[in-house]
Amino acid sequence: MLSLLSSLLSLLFVFLISFFIITSHFSFPLSLLKLLGFIKFTASRDDDDNYKRDEGTYVVGEEELQRELMPRHVAVIMDGNRRWAKREGLLTSQGHEAGAKRLIEFSELCFKLGIHTVSAFAFSTENWGRHKIEVKCLMSLIQHYLKSKIQYFQREETRVSIIGNLTKIPESLRQTIHEIEEATKSYKKKHLILAIDYSGRLDILRACKSIVHKSEAGLIRKEDVDEAMIERELLTSCTEFSSPDLLIRTSGEQRISNFFLWQLAYTELFFSSVLWPDFDKDKLVEALVSYQRRERRFGCRV
Amino acid sequence: MAELPGQIKRMSGGIKQLLEQIFGFSRRCLFRIISMGPIPNHLAFIMDGNRRYAKKCGLEEGSGHKAGFSALMLMLQYCYELGIQYVTIYAFSIDNFRRQPEEVQSLMDLMLEKIKSLLEKESIVHQYGIRVYFIGNLALLNDQVRAAAEKVMNATAKNSRVVLLICIAYNSTDEILQAVKKSCINKYTYNIEASGSYKHEDTDSEIEAKDIENQEKKIQLVDIEENMQMSVAPNPDILIRSSGETRLSNFLLWQTGNSQLCFPAALWPEIGLRHLVWAILNFQRSHSYLEKRKKQL
Image 1 (cartoon, rainbow over the protein chains, first blue to last red):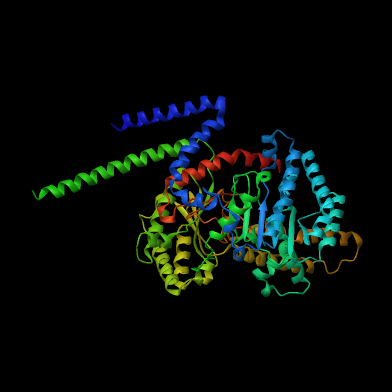
Image 2 (cartoon, rainbow over the protein chains, first blue to last red):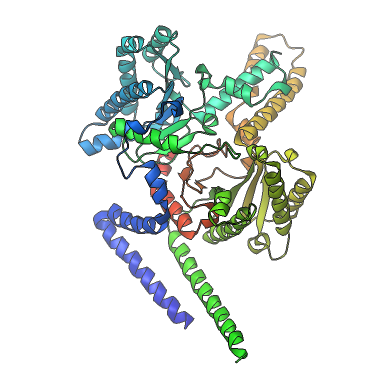
């Protein structure tokens, strides 16, 4: 009887597999999505609470936001520019341009809502592996935007800092970075941090090297090395609130991709399936409402 | 008449066994199908939601964690059946020491009991040939728990089929700090020894050689990674946190830079096969893209 059952089951599975293989010639994503959809339905029946909290089956308004519960530092991984461009029938460079515009609007909204620091993952160390033309285009886009917005940031009294390795970027971009940092360094109320050629691991390594160097020079004792000291040596120490309270990643990917590692220890993560150029005010308010509803316990009972 | 309840009990026991066998068989068939795609090598779990489960079911304070332990055994069984080689679990954080002393004590007692049970013949360790590591600042634990943990690590040191890493008294920032301190001390002693042999050099070419040596003496990424306690396992492919909270809570920050993150809403004692399958299907979906990106680098 068991052999009959097993042969029946294996026939069923063979049928399913051949069905998928045949449909894959026509539309692989479609058949896989259907399977995923079915499994998701059974797996996420109890995920309704999660979705209600995070994506909003109803319209959330700015009125729901409470000023005193605003995060002090919001970090964002701006993912989805290339997919957005493909969807709109545009070039990749236009996708990145739309992304840059979206970042300016995003930071303006955040500062208006009372958030002190906004940090954005503009270019990762791993992005050097992309096509040379795309990389060149990204570098010139960043340079163009920074140069053209110096007066805007001065008007808005926003301090701009660029963190990252910065040794491989073009000399002209490095000069523009120096210019904008100098022009805005005195402002204290709003802070925009751009991570260019940044890697979370290399940031920690840099901090470690700096500590070793100081300890060899006799400036600090090995016994005094603690977590606070490492945090002070990280690149995010340029701002008052170095650990983000909220991290937003767009385009549906649920990964950190080597952005802040140390700094994200207690950060609330928010993943949105929307592509970055489409992440408008409503989506930001959704993310903030979700953040404000969360109970942050930091390991112990509140 | 008196035999009837006995017969019914025997029948229901038999039916239950048959159902279990059928479920087990279909589960293994399902795993065979899933293994046709890429399977993660290392899975990490944050077992969140035990206290909320106890509250939800109206149980007494400590029973949520007991239910959580049974759920853990089930998940481990599924993972090792599927062929996942490394499983890491977040058992107790350094921050958790700040909870109420009674709760901390009851957790320590539960952990001591369960760690000791790992050495029994019928335990999952012997069933799957698991090598167990305890990762964390073990000096913060009481003597009994630490001794039990070390005993288990020694007893399972020869197993090589699959690995279970239990993070206890662990914080990722603490792990990185210890690794940084160790790298500093290693480099410091290396420099002291090396500089001893350079005392009598004055010529230019030898000063140049010394500069090159200096570059090598500087700390590299691999030095910190080697000194991490988690270096015994590769980076996790998937991190699953139950109870729907979307945060990392100071767990494996260094290692999960490129891991798939999953946040099922189910509380830890409610976690089941479907959540695991869903996480792995998602992993398979983005796997080919990530492999392409890795090759680019």
